[in-house]
Image 1 (cartoon, rainbow, N blue to C red):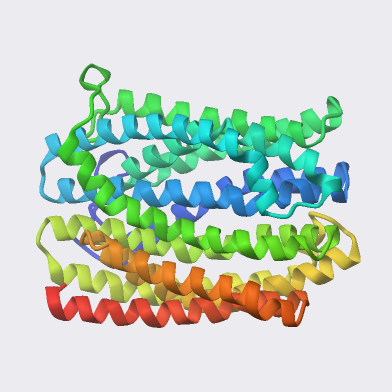
Image 2: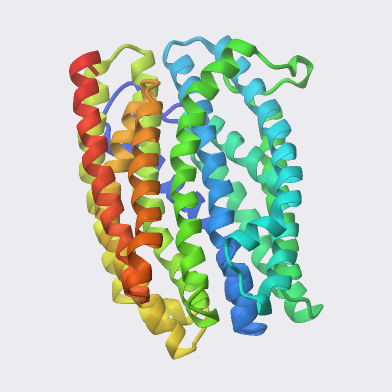
Length: 448
């Protein structure tokens, strides 16, 4: 295996399977740790404060996921553009993309934070949050929104490191900040007697730590992605490239959460126990999703560099090998979660009803991930060629259309949690069929 200095991978030569794993597994671990910020919040308040506080924090999960998924999606534009520049050995272009991306992340993070603070009450009204937990939910959300500039910046910085094959550095930084988050959760809640505001402050502190650490590492880097504050300015052509790829990817990632907000509204109508159960289940099942999604991002990174270098045959091999490894890892992770679903759910709340209802959601959602393998892999491949709009449009129509239709058309006819959860495999199966079909049409037309 060909390795560059400082742990960077040579993605243009040698075997592919090991490089997919070396990119995807740290990516999955990084996503795990990010999710642990919210999971730790839910677990601490669920175990030490109560079911109501757990529902207040967990009921915000679709909103948190919407913002984070959008940021991650937009940052893929940075990943693709820098990967292509590195593949072309255009290091000046790579550095221009770095400084443009960092400035964009800072400006948009602040703007999103201000807008989100103003919209917080309306968001909770849209989610139909029960009155008994509304005050706690609003407190948590307002403090969490202060962390958005740091979350946005971290994701763009991590995309910069991934573009050059370095997934280790973002993982190490997030491991440190994740540990701080858990310790602060326990300190604020157990030592200071705080409730939802304590876990929100812990998340804010940890997010600031991770973003700041990567920022200083970029300043001190001697590689092609070095950040020089003396050259800190927007490069309009590069920003346009980043947004042409990143915005559709961000929309594609966010529409899942938009549709899930509708589902969460239906979940909230079933009562506090169901909200708590769904929240616990989400924090269990999502770890399997991060595994399959990490391979989609790994495919984007490797194909992006090889497309920049003009090696289309290696791009196609990456997709084929990525699909096989992704399927194997996803099935294994789903089987592991299903084997221990009750003990895992009990970590968040040991109420038997919470565990029983949560297990229903886990089973339905994990079944749907078999279709998500194809969605993420083929979308990631097309995105590496700069074709982001079609996967985003397909996702918008299939995911949002089907889930909204189900929530407002089917669910009212049979108001059970199982009926509501059935929307996940149905919507993702239709999306997978549409995206794979688009891939073959584009391959015939453009030859990739």
